Image (cartoon, rainbow, N blue to C red):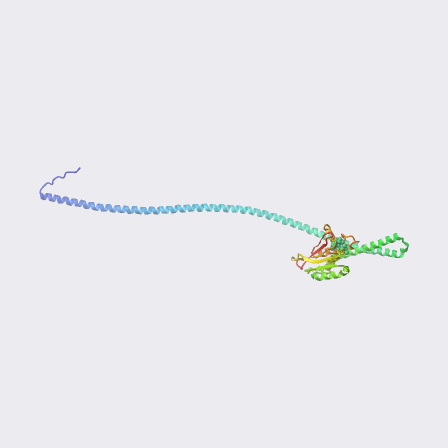
Length: 362
Ligand SMILES: Nc1ncnc2c1ncn2[C@@H]1O[C@H](COP(=O)(O)OP(=O)(O)OP(=O)(O)O)[C@@H](O)[C@H]1O
Ligand SMILES: [Mg+2]
């Protein structure tokens, strides 16, 4: 609703003054209004600035908060990882403990075994000592028996021989045959006793070991046996042989025994083939063999052949006392080697021995 403007009272002059007055008042009001507006604008600008600052702060704070959340998340992951590592470490420690227990058990078992071995070793050493003592005793017994038997046997032979010479005409055929048998047996027994004495001495004889050239020894052994080869067809094959560490005189006896047996047991062959060779010669041991194409033997008795007076062939067929191989084994054993044989009935034989190549390990 508009208020009706009342007409100004008074004269024109007064009316003009009143109007001027009103105009000034209106101007003042307008001026006041303007300054009020400016102030309000300032306030508004300030408010806007504050709001803007606030926004920036807010964004900053949000950023910080996000970073904090990220850090917390990272931290969680780290924590989880650490827990995993801890768990794995615990597992490893548990495994380690189990392994430790196992190792301790094995160690204890090993110690027990070592103790057992020690006990066994001590037992073996004692048994060895006893065996050595028993062997020495047996050796002494063999020596004294063969030595003491020698004289009575020679007496028996001597007196039987005297009887044959003085009373031969008084005896009939039967009596002469008895006397001849006594003489033969006494001679055989005297020979056996001599062999046994020699065998016994071999066990006691001093050994003088040196580096020996086997080629030379084989040549010597073959030369010694030349009389056994007369009228025979023999093909020899003698390979180069290694050097060994041995007593040359004893070793010569070994070779003479092996070669003389090869000659003897091929006697029934139209052509004898005898080979002297070596094998498995890489290690510290030399292996030498003597092979022939003779009558051979049954492998079941391969080890027996090396025993004293052990023979597989009848004396009527192949002469001998059966002491040769016993001597071989004794000599080779004293050198720390082995002696053995392979053969087949009617399929030839191979006799081996092994010896250390040098002083090492003596
Ligand atoms: N080369 C060989 N072939 C077949 N048999 C053999 C051979 N060498 C040895 N033997 C067997 O082994 C036995 C024992 O041999 P060893 O040399 O000890 O005695 P021997 O030759 O009969 O008599 P000795 O050597 O005392 O004169 C022989 O009687 C024979 O049965
Ligand atoms: Mg012999």
